[in-house]
Amino acid sequence: MPTDPDFERTRRFALGEVKRVLGIADPTVDRLFAKAKTILGPDRTAQCLDLARMAPLTRRWVPTSAMAALVAGTPSLGTEWWIAQHEELSPALVWESLGTPDALLAARHGDPATEDGGSSLAQLGRWISDDAADKEWGRPVDWVDVADPRVDGRVGLPIGAHAGDRLTAAFARGGRIWADVVDLNAGSEQPPRLGTRLAERRYHDVAQVRSAWSLAAGTAPIRLPGETAGRNSDPFASHLAAVDSRRLHEWAIAHGANARELAGPWRTKDALWSARLRMGLLYSRPGVWLTFDDAVVALVDGNEAALNDAMNALSD
Image (cartoon, rainbow, N blue to C red; front, top):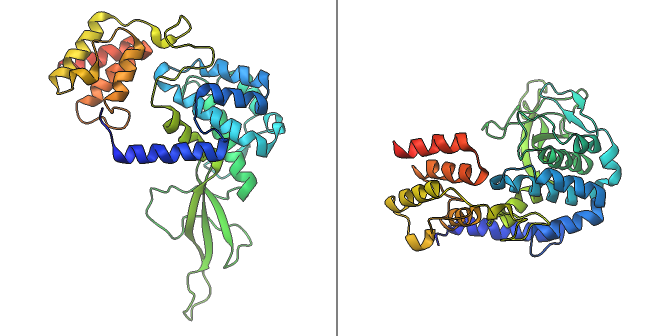
């Protein structure tokens, strides 16, 4: 079984974060939804579970990670968060009202063209990450692209700013970066000229646990509550087309994969997805294996168009 020391270290850290923030030492989806019932209530939890089922099988980590954020954030924000207007700072630095979380939950979709995970659940996870950060550190005054290497002048000065002030800016959902207001002419004889200089940054625990959950609990087929491995309720028990399975298996063998490690050709989606994880494609997809992995994902998700494209590319 291929291993990656960096990935394993990251996963151990993620397990620790899930335990610290959620109090779940051995993260399973069943435990997560059981905790959600006590925090969100049975009705909202049932609605969230319905939305989680809308995700493609290979992307179930998206809605379950969002659930981790909702379970982590609701106690500090209170259940009133679900009925309060959610506001976001637009790129034009204007606060815009986007409706209530309960309304987004009931709508089932935000923007279907851009949403991840097949429903509005991922968006709710982002909303609660931002709102938890706003409650702890105050609303941001600007957005910062942390890929930009510049340190000075990245955050706009609000009216009335003074040297020594510290401003809060956002760099991601639930991620905040601080900027110090400084006199750029300090130490010279020139008149004061105020500017900003970036300081430390961090993610709020609600945002942190959202990414930690995907690493801690995403290393096996993700089954939702009510789904039992190998039973009729298990979507991963669905059989694969033998011709597609054999073709992928033969390609993997021809490109150096270990037959014992593959344990194929694969009869079910469970067998194929588990082999993909054993091969280390969760954290490493070198070269032509990118296309192989695309084919695996398409086959498990039943995406015929993507599967045909990937299969054709493997034949080139």
